[in-house]
Image 1: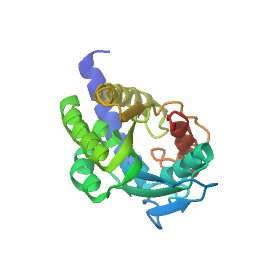
Image 2: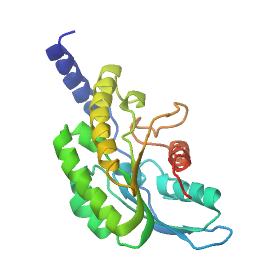
Image 3: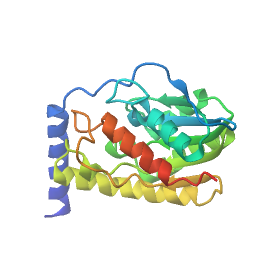
Image 4: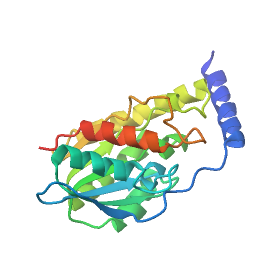
Length: 231
């Protein structure tokens, strides 16, 4: 298949997906700050910032979304209480996160986690734009937290709502942005990149086939937490 035919196929599949996909699930309701009790010690102050995965689209509350499950996983690993805050927005690209979300996130955190990139891939933002925005985000987050974790872009090939050709195309674009992310994180001793791969298929996604279910958020949060050096 020629490159032009491949791009035409992807464009047609993208239009088809937009036409048949149901309305996206709303963000998680309820408080955007909370506490997970631990056995003692100073509380770990956690910030999660990002797109619809941070906003908890697909579940009812943040307790069932990424942030609540991630805070639970941190408490299990450290035995410390976790004070968490989440700042997320459906459809947010790195540019919006940089200019709108991070400035409203506050300061004084032990750990900041960035969930971002899927919308940049789907809106066809280039690697140079991603590098510019992510570099600024990392700098801002390092001013607000002792340590920063950048989570890799989820693998589009696993999304049930996407035809195979479109999933592979978007995954290729995601890989290019993840390469830039790793390069940026390699320049700082306080910021790390972790992979978002290893997605199971059973009950992982919400009904729209693009966002996560409670099961998906729980698995994903625990997987990310297991990759961190919390010493």
